[in-house]
Image 1 (cartoon, rainbow, N blue to C red):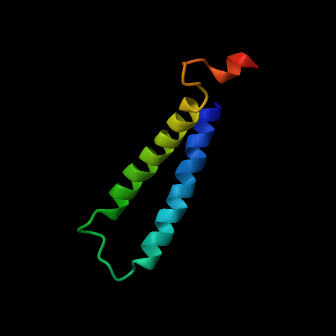
Image 2 (cartoon, rainbow, N blue to C red):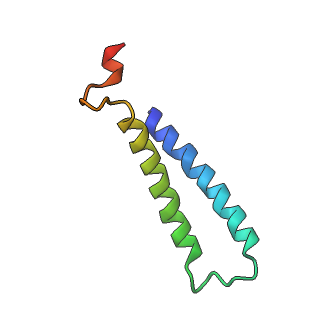
Length: 70
């Protein structure tokens, strides 16, 4: 499934970015903030949003599917 692969790719990219953020915040205590749980929810949300935006971009303002026009 193309959309599942896209979501997993985006999820991995966000995971890497969040790991880099965590490394840059070594002195900030993350146990009270719940950074790991927030990271997981954020990464999944960004992946889903990106796939939905890609799907929405397929349609014209009139609601016609651009792939049907090919």
